[in-house]
Image 1 (spheres, one colour):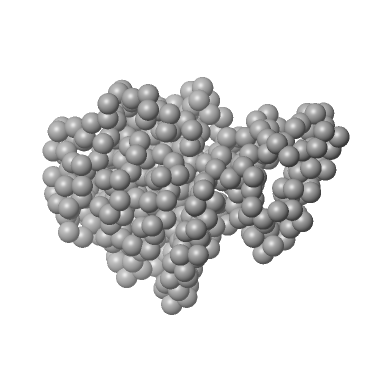
Image 2 (cartoon, rainbow, N blue to C red):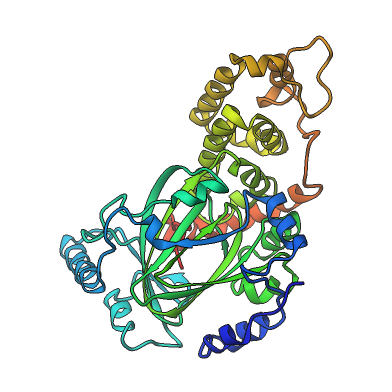
Length: 410
């Protein structure tokens, strides 16, 4: 049976927002070594697998950089960005929100003198001491899922007391603290119940406090530099920094990620945050469907059909995406497997080919608008409300696009 947050972990959260700590006491949470069968079922039915911990040593292709080299390289980056007089590649955050007026150097000073009321973090550090492809998905992860397209290596600087509110990433990911940095992770599966709650809270702050008590399937993890954590695509998560330092992360997709991505689309969660998040979500959905067509065909077909209405809307506005999707499906139709396939919708005629049926019923604008395999009965009802909230994000920073992408605020 799920329990609330262990006393030993709760004690380490002293100094964080009292209302958040009060909320944590009321959220049922499982620990990695004690996951009830019903909680496991919520995860495996809604996304790739459960979140898991791995030895961080498995993920390093090079020797992890020292704290000294990370700090010096970060200071060099701050100085060069200031001298260049252009918009920096990194983003400073204060109280969970992007703040271009904050001095990013304060984040480094807060590693020594944490500030409970006003922690400043920096996201998107591109420094010489952490070259691209230094960090990768561990080989042992392939026992559960198969990572593809490992990209978007990011480095984050987060002092103690930094807290990232509930959010959803557009890909599977592996993250690991470095040096003395330690993190506490609250993670929830992307079930229809949880995604509806997340949709209802979009455009509002303090999501964990607002909906945390109602979420199902929660798990809690603590990571130090000895562990990396795998977060399956679509999961809701909130992160607390218990000891300040640096965190490295990468994105990837798997052949079965399209299942969870499809659910995000049907709940309209692509329409929150910046336009770049929506672009990423559809791009990764398409890539995962393409991977699944190679060896997980039914997952690909069902995911596509479940998100059909959203897919058609997006393809009408994005011709290149539609062209790429059409190419992928046409390549699949040439395979021997496709010639024998029967559509899971149950409406394929006895003498009708799978290619003909899918083209007529489940591709683009010439078929029915509603999906016969729709897994979410009323997820689409939230879309008009979410679309209005998205307009607010697009107008932030004087109309300038504000990126709300993967791991932007951990």
